Every structure is written in structure tokens, then in C-alpha cells.
Image (spheres, rainbow, N blue to C red):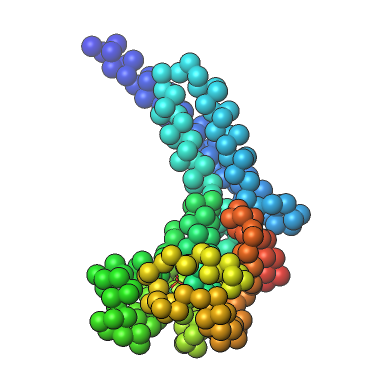
Length: 267
Ligand code: S3P
């Protein structure tokens, strides 16, 4: 009995040593991630390198080929990689990233991609309001009117003030109110996504969920509405990115390079 307890203590001691080694290795790994992101920022190296993550995971997969714990170890490494993305985002930006721009400019797609590549929380403002109000944007406009919907948008921005490291895909009309622009600027970087009216038309032509375009689904209408909003978007934006004919990772990389240049100049 006595001897069995000794064996148990020994195994616990081994586990404690493993935990200490893992903790130290994680501390070194995470500090390295911070240094890498600073290096990339200073030397103009692309920030998003999804292929690098795949390589790291492949090495783990290979070296656990014969282990009975293969799945568990891979699962842990997936968590480590996810955490590394989060560290990158925190090193890059202190606050939130708010995407503005006309309907169909790419806000939803870009926010989802950034959320995925940098493990940032994503807030899709339209979806958030729909959930909170329990009805579609189309119905909110029809039942309560546009002014009510615009108040929902302002309230959402107020509720964002305490949050950090969120990518927010704002509804196309958010920057039209001056108060909203103030709130957005306090909350983080404002990124204006643009595209040609033809590209916008192509992206939104089948949508029935955009009350402002219902019955007006034409390039000339889109062009006029875009032009009437241009000044407001411009006044709100810290940076501007044209999304026409670019692939999504390219757009995210351009966004991160431009924002990290701004952040660098701040320090
Ligand atoms: C609007 C844009 C829509 C939605 C609503 C009004 C606008 O959001 O908020 O239909 O005024 O431009 P998206 O830009 O995400 O389509």
C-alpha cells in the first residue's frame, strides 16, 4: 500500500515537472509571437501568413504519427495557434476595427476573414440589431421607420465603447450621423471600404434585405447614393481601401499594413 502511494506521488511529481516545462515553453513561444509581429511591422513583411500556421500544424501531425494521444495533442496545438492569433491582434491594435462603406463594399466578408485570421471577435451590426429587435432590418424599417433603425445603430456603438479587439462591420448608413462618427473614432480605427458602383451592383443585385435599394436596384441609383454619402464616409475614415477586383486575403493584408503604419506613427 505504502509503495503504491509512493508510485502515485512519483507520477504526480512527473506531471508537475511537465506542467512547469510546458508553462515555460508557452511563455517563450508567446513572447516570440509578439517579437515576430513587431519585426513584421518594422520591416514591412506581410502580417497574414496562414501557410505558416499550416506548416506548424503539419510538423505536429507528423511527429505524433505513432502516438495514441495524437488527436489530443493536435487539439491542444490548434488552441495554441488560436491564442497566437489573438496575441498578434492585441500586439497590433489597442482598440477595435470598425468597417464602414456602402452596401456591398465588402464589410461583412472582410470582418469575417479578419476575425478568422486574427481570432478577433466579430460584430455584424445589422445581425446584432436584428437579433436584439427580434425582426429583420426590412421589417424594422417597415414597422418602426428609418429613424428608429438609426437610433438602434447609435445605441449599438454606445454599447461598444467598453470593448476591445472587436472587428465591427457597421451598417452602410452608420457614418451619416456625426455623433456616430465621434463614437466610432473613440472606439477604434475606422476603415472605409469602397468599390465601383458596377462592382457594388453585382454584389447586391439579388439581395431583398436592403430596404434602401428595393425597387432601386440600378447602377445609376447606387452611384448617386454613393456619391451623396462620399463626404461623410471620407470624414469618418482613418484609412480607405478599394475592394474592387481584389481577393479577400489581399484586402485584409492591405488593411493591416495601413493600420499598423498608423499605429507605428502613434508611438
Ligand atoms: C443601410 C445599409 C445596410 C442596412 C440597412 C441600411 C444603409 O447595411 O444597415 O439596409 O443605409 O446603407 P449593409 O451596408 O451592411 O448592407
